[in-house]
Structures are given as structure tokens and as C-alpha cells.
Amino acid sequence: MPSTPVFDWDDTTDQVNATRGLIDRLEPCVVRNEAGRVVWDNDRWDFLNKDDCPDTVHPSLWRQSRLNTAQGLFEVVPGIYQVRGLDVSNMTIIEGETGLVVVDPLTSREVAAEALGLYIRNRGERTVKAVIYTHSHGDHFGGVLGVTTNEAVAAGDCLVIAPDEFMHHAVSENIFAGPAMMRRAVYMYGRSLPVGAEASVGFGLGQALSTGTVGLIAPTDTVTGTGQEFVVDGVRLFFQLTPDTEAPSEMNFYLPDHRVLLIAENVNHSLHNILTLRGAQVRDAHAWASYITESIRLFDQVEVLIGSHNWPTWGNDEVMRMLVEQRDAYAYIHDQTVRLMNQGLTGPEIAEEIQSFPGELGRAWSVRGYYGSISHNVKAVYQRYMGWYDGNPAHLWQHPPVEQAKRYVAAIGGADTTVATAREAFETGDLRWAAELLNHVLFAEPEHVSARELQIATYERLGFAQENGTWRNIYLTGAKELREAGQETRRTGAPGKESVEMLAALATGQIFESLAVRLDGPRAAAHRLLLRWEFTDTDEVFTLLVGNGVLTPMKGDAPGGEAPQLTVRLERAALNMVLAQRTTFTEAIGSGAMAVEGDVTVLATFHGLLEKPARNFPIALP
Image (tube, rainbow, N blue to C red; front, side, top):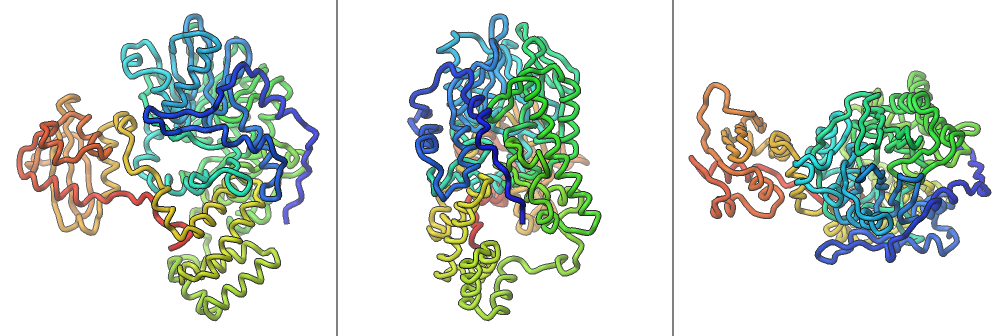
């Protein structure tokens, strides 16, 4: 069993820092889009500050969520400001000689515009001279069109600065695995849950994500190495490139004239994820710790630490303590997982061995598992080195979940007997075992009423006990979807239409690569198609070959001079509109937005072979 943490409830440093420098608040803290739909509502979390912690929430998570609700415009030091509490992330605003440098413009256009408006209301109108994306996750670039325009960037009036490989990684998740990740994000972030003491209280890193219009402007300037410096409107910026840490493309930067270090998402007031539960590529915990060590060496004169989430830390001693704690947390998880891995333990076994940090590290608020957990981070480190297979031959070719469930339930003596055994486990407090048994029943017999009811109670009790906000949301979302018999699932998945703004930011080759992973290979194997795409506004030519159940995009003509069956001439915007489901190929051809030459039925065949990603696939049930 994990050791009981010793919480220093008398330490109010975080409470003081979370509200330090407050200049103004957004009242009410509600943001709507042009159609009047609410895309952000921070006021719904007011209960956290009015009520005492109930039995249905871990007191440490309650404390963290309360801190994360602080909203408004804050002065970090003269000339550097943050808007917090208008999204999951922070927007940092740096004053230059005549204009502004905006860092991480939140998730969506509406909240970013509101954040900038709050600054302007208090500090006066200034032009945005540069936007900095610290890393390649959407909550740090999606609101860019709320603080600048494509026209301003194209004219050179506003720079967009980002780390190396930013565009590749910013879109790769959305292109290939986006639909699956977005469905799992419903669980991780509690998107379908109401807020309240028996529902969502946030997820540690922040309270929620805004749901407005997401956009992207490609960088004009790229940071390719540590030590690279920019001077923007008189603001000196010293960059540290930190790839393969919290994001595959990420960077910190130091403001030497202010002695402020912006640490991106590499350091937070929470343990972060080595593998986020929504799904992603496994991060490198060893590199993560090493880059924080480099930060300690490079920026030993720093007086203030600010990040892309949570609140700042003031004072050199406190900043260094924070950096060391965070560095040691990731290093400990990495090193001890590898040590035990080399002793022959598997990921789940190591997670049972490493359930807490030792000594003073175990008492540090900054590395509590509000967002990432030691348990799933240990398994992620194991996965990075060893993969999904643990070496046991019995696990090499197991039955899929439904077939496993049928066999387990039959072996135990049927569904009713299995439920009875699970009830005993539930009543004795072995909730993990109860959940596993009941999951087998529900995958074998999804309509089993008593199994469903007991699983709901099990998930709720597990959720209420969690210090980790994402674990809480996952358990409670599972309970909610079971309670609603899957009906709510059809309404709470990702939106059915893609963002035109995001599609416009993708390279044409990336667009066609995204179609390749939507091709129904078994059906496509019966066809050989060759389509030529001529983009009249960009002078690009692409050829798409469908053969052997594979879609191969090729820039230029087909090899060997093979003649296409169909040529499509269009502007790139027309393709964006079709893929965003704002129109169809037939409508685009009829309106003249697309011109075709050759066998037009080829386009219909090709489009018919593309599978629409499932937005709402079941998780708690088969």
C-alpha cells in the first residue's frame, strides 16, 4: 500500500501566489461566440470557493481546483502580465517599446480575444508585434486569431515564433489519431460531466478547455537551438529548445531584463503526464528531467518562474526548489521504473512498487498527482522501452475483450455468480477487483441490469477517492455513460465538422495523408484509382493512387507517366470546405468551385471508400 502523504495544510504559499498581482477580473467570467453559445464559463466553479470539501472529493484535489479557479489579469512583474482562468491555459502578455508580445494565445479565438481585451481595458490599446507558441498542443495556439490576423502576419507586422518542428507536431495528432483522442478526451477531461462536488471539479492542470473557434497561423520564425535570441519590439528573449519533453516540439525562454523564466509546460504545479490518458506518443521522462537540469544551469539568476498553466513562483530560492522538485519527480519515475524493469517486473507490477515519492519529494505540493499520476507514468516509461508486450507468452495472443469476458464469466459460473462475487469485493472495499469483474459481465452481457448498477456505484466510489483529476473524470464519465445506457454518448463526442481554420493551416500533403488513414482498405482493394489534383491558387499538383487497399499521395505526376482517370482543378479553399463538411464534392462541382476532366465517377468511388471517423465509439460498454 502507498504511504499516507503528509500534507502541509499550513503552507499557504500557493494560495498567496495564485492571486498575487491581480489587477482586474472578468465579471461575469463567461465568454460567448458570435452565435451566443457559451464557450467558457469560469463562474460555474464558484462552489469550490464557497463550500468546504465534501466527502465526494479528495481534499488535495479540492485545494488544487480552488487554486485553478483564480481568474483575471495579473501583473507578474512590471511589463509582464498573465491572463488566467479564461481557459485551461494561461496567456502571457509582454509589453515592448510600442506593442505587445503575446505568448500561448489559449485554445480558441473567442477567449483569446476576451483575454486581450481585458488587458487593453486596464493597460491601454497596443498592437501585437509577435505571438509565441511555446509548444505544439492546441491549448497554446488555437486562439491565435483572437490576438492577430493572417493579414498582419503576412504583411510582416506580427511575427509568429515557434519551436523547431512545430507545424509537423501541431497537426500530426489531429491528422492521424485525432478522432480517437478526442473521444477519449471526453473521459479524461470530464467534458460530458456537469460540474459539482459529485461530478467534475477540474483536472489538476486546469478546470476545463474552452470550446470556441480553433485556428492556427503557421510560424514565421523558428527556434532551432538553445541559445538562440530574438529582440522583438525591444524585448530580449533567450530561448531554450526542449524537444521530446511535455510535447515533441517545445521550448522555454528567459527574459533577462526582467529575470523571468517562462518554462512552458515543462514545469507545473502538478505532476504531468509521461503518457496522457487521452492517448499520445509516449514522452521521454529522462530527457524531460535533463532539460530541467539544463534550465537550472542556464537561468540561475531567475527571480520569477511562469508557465503555461497554474500560477507563478517568485523568489530565486523558491524557483530553484520548484525546478529541482519537478526535475527529480520525472527522474525518479524514469530511473526507478527502468531499475525494476531490469529486475524483470512488468509495468503494472512496477506501478504497485512505486506508489509515492520518497522523503521531502513526497511532501512537495508541486509534484502531487493531480494531472499525471505516478501509476500511469510508470507504465508509460515501461511502454516507451518495452512496448505493449510484457514477455509472457500467455499475453502474446489473447482474445479481444468481448471474447475474454464471455469466457471469464462462464468460467466463474455465469453472470449472476460473477456479479455476486463482485458485490462481495465492493462491500469489502476491493473496488479495483469489483470493477474488473463487472467489466467482464458487461462486455459479455451488456444489458445485465444489476452488473450495470453495481459498476456505476463502483466507478463513482473510485472516482470520489481520487486525488488525480483525470482519473476522477474517467471513473465518473464511465458511471454517467453506464447510467444513461449509452444514449448520452451519441451527443457528447467531438463535433462532427472539422475546423476550416485548422485545415487551412495544413500543408496539402498533410491533408492527403489524413485521407490515407480513412481509406477502407478491404473495400478499396477491389479498385485501382488514379486522381490528379491541380490547385490553381498554389500551383501545386498532387496525384492520389489507390491500389492494394492503400492510398498513396504523390506530389507531382504519377510515376511512369500513367494517365490519371480524373483530373480535378480547384483552389485549396474549396477542398478545405468539402473536408470540413461545409459543402460536398457534387455541390462544389455544380457551383464551379471545382472543375473536373475525365471519368467523374472516379471521384464518387474514391470518396465512397473514405470512412468517416467514429466520434462516439463506446468505452464503458462493448
